[in-house]
Image 1 (cartoon, rainbow, N blue to C red):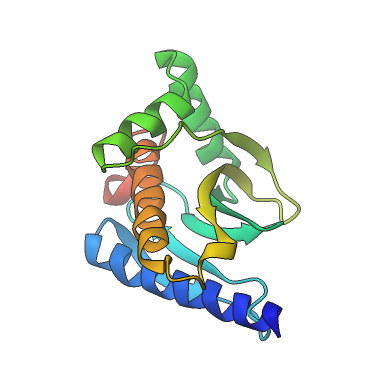
Image 2 (cartoon, helix red, strand yellow):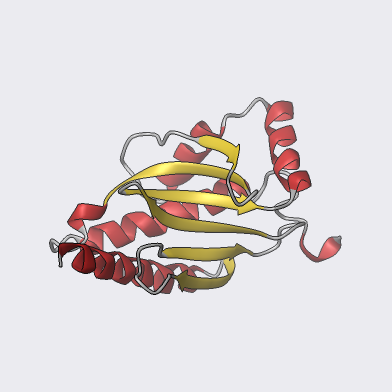
Length: 169
């Protein structure tokens, strides 16, 4: 029964985050996706003007909430990497700057980049959101933090590579 309540809390969390990030207007379609059991729920936010399809998401894996940017396009992933090589910037530093601008006062996030089992090029960071607290009256704080994570990722990656290609291409 605890697992069902936790799944329901996670879905409610994702729905509240989705509502707020839709209002920000920086993403394309925003949806909460879940399987029948709600065990694999996530907020998915399509990149608005990317040169190739890409999406941002908040998801839960191994009890941790992750913020992600994913794309199937190797070229898009490489264009982001190439921009970073040319500028010498580091994603954790860029991300922390964007999060601070959004009012985040926590520690810098760690960062991973790899190709996942679904063959999606993935940029991701574990967030400080504690899944266990979602049902303990701390939902509002978690939602605000989730929104900051998605908006921070979008602001970090939008100017990189072909993430702003849009209609010009």
